[in-house]
Structure formats: C-alpha cells, structure tokens
Image: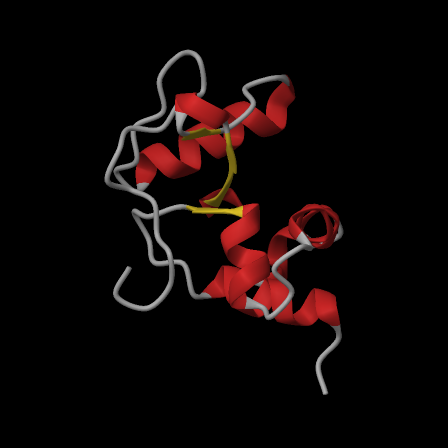
Length: 106
C-alpha cells in the first residue's frame, strides 16, 4: 500500500499540462480531503528529477481565485514553468480562470 505522500505525488502526476490543481484538490484525489498542508510537505520533499510536475499545484486565494506566491526564486520558476505550458500568471501571482483541474474530465 502506498504511503500518504506517495498517493499525493501520484495525484499530482495526473494534472495535465496547461492545467493547475489546488493543494486541496490533490488531497481529495489522494483520498485525504483534509490534508492540503501535507500535500505541500510532500511536494517540498521531492527532488527535481522525480518526475512530479510540482509547478501545477497552486494555492486557493479566497475571493481572488487561485494563484502562486512569487516570493523567492521558486515562485518565479513556477511562473516560468506554468507559462511554458500556456498558463498565464499575472504580476500578483493570480492565475486566469479556466485553468483549474478537478480530476478526470474536470
């Protein structure tokens, strides 16, 4: 049986290029709907060569929708990687609507 972190990383691998999913969505897909924070911990532990598209996981920003933190080099790298897949991230880190993925066909 896969560990919780393995389930989270497997769920992240399902997010298609050009789409994003929130930490909460990944937790739900992995069978642990209240584990959004643990998804973040799992992603922080992954090496770059692990084949996990970590950049497709974003935060929920209340009424502002979804987005990323642009603080530090990781934020700019995430913005670049998402941009390479056609996902627009504005200067405040917000992601335009229509890019959020909720699971199969979602």
